Image (cartoon, rainbow, N blue to C red; front, side):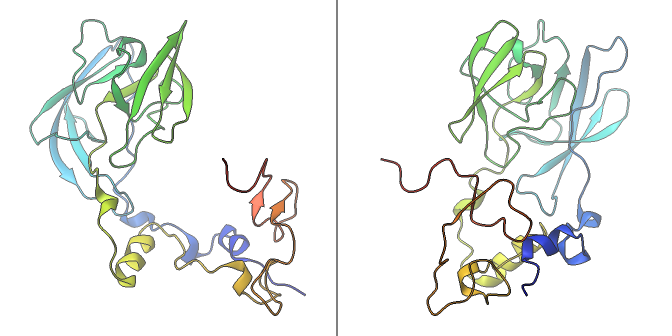
Length: 242
């Protein structure tokens, strides 16, 4: 009889599988507009290191004295002032300003894009990442991401002009296992990752046998039960693409 695989044990929610939330600085979202509010100005107070994040975080202060966290672009410094506009009319398209997609020219680099209006920002938030405004049709705007994939957004979705700060972070090699250990630990990721074919037959569907081989097709149905759902799940095709 087999045992539960690692993915199942992580899903149970034990302490070792949870992200260390007590070390996280807080949510980084756009401030929702209040009634009859169309423009919010804010100033960068300081930059904060957020464990578990690759990009730095900025602590900002709004005109009314309220403080919040903000995902800053590359090249920002303390004391600089920016704005968040609901309509974007008459506002300058400059690095750091938060504007709706409908007011941003085609070819502009943007990040921290809302999936739906007023959700706070969902897309292109990793360090050194940005999306390009590519096309517009009616009330929708098409963006091109670093992965070469495109996605259409509502024209009222907010985004920040520029590129997320912290670019080039992954260029430096870990050099030793200890550095990788601490980096993954801060994100509650399990490391090192052990291949299924190296395990015992009781520990993984691909385990066991005289040779390290899956001994079966690695494509798996979307409806496979937990514990068998490993490998290439619901793959349309496998192998190298010409």
